Image (cartoon, rainbow, N blue to C red; front, side, top):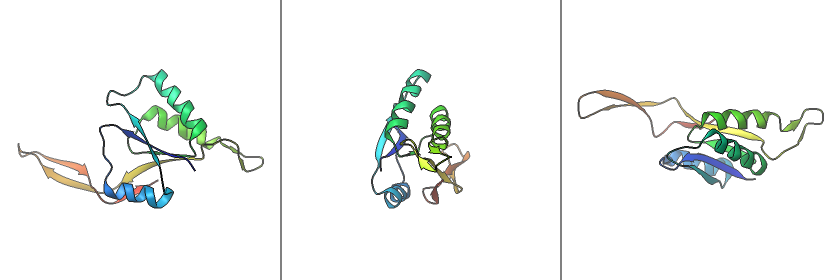
Length: 122
């Protein structure tokens, strides 16, 4: 099974996210998005590649167009007449976390950030 993790090159995974990936899939390959992002035409090329080569795609860094398009394509991968998988891509996952942590900035302002624990693959 070929699993790609979509991640901005500037982002790091929390230890819990790495454990979730390893426990669920065993191995995965990072698919790094440049800090400056991609144009829509470039995104379409990446969608084509992932659709043809990935069994599973996991988003650690959401890229709205790619997330939407791959989810759409994954839903179409099953031949609903036979129940047989017709193409490579079978599922799209995203990391989700309900937990937030309060942090106080040097200027006294308080912000909410996503916690390092409590992650789920949904």
